[in-house]
Image 1 (cartoon, rainbow, N blue to C red):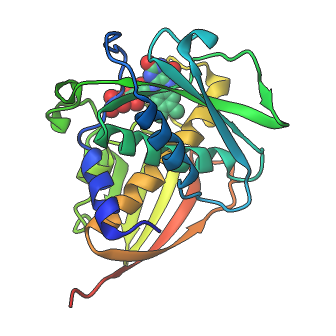
Image 2: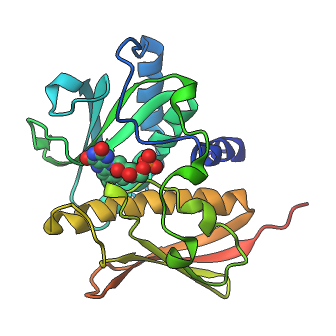
Length: 255
Ligand SMILES: Cc1cc2nc3c(=O)[nH]c(=O)nc-3n(C[C@H](O)[C@H](O)[C@H](O)COP(=O)(O)O)c2cc1C
């Protein structure tokens, strides 16, 4: 795990990041920045071990994306929880890049020429490009999110629901629901989603969203001095609320 300073820096980026839909074409990523991105990708922490994940950065023109200087194409082995794993890993990159003034947009709509890479399945892309500090989010409270009371039930004393809800999600569907009781968090994905996304694509993208959410939740727990044990659920429940994970929390004593 990264040290606390790095986690704290990533936590702060929850409020700075945003989805970049317009990139300043006069700015380009330097060779050092590209090198730093490659290095960061190698250090991303997986949610689930032993799922092979590969990615490659290609010039935007090699994809259907109209934005970004590069698109990062992400491929994965299709094992249990692989979509959660992709969300969890690459949200770390999204937040890290915000700290380096590199704009990102998770881009589910993008299409690639190669749906396979070394037998791994194409999952999603991220559009990337250099940006100016001023283009990042200034007041996160102005970004559109659901009322906390809708996504967070039970014990409210943790006071993190108001922050974790700023996680990005496909079409801003925010499929996460949390029940907090007796120092335990139960995380669900709701299937009651209203969206312009084709219905059959919702479970795919919302599973990536849930992985993103888990990473952001864990940053917020660390920020609030909680240590935790995470137990991923077996996702085979046919319900409006699909269990994703349970977190057993313990408040760290500050010496
Ligand atoms: C898995 C995923 C797929 C996304 N796909 C697209 C996309 O295809 N096009 C787009 O403009 N935004 C896309 N987004 C960005 C979301 O629309 C955005 O995260 C959401 O509206 C919240 O806004 P924010 O990221 O600026 O906080 C995607 C986000 C996620 C997490």
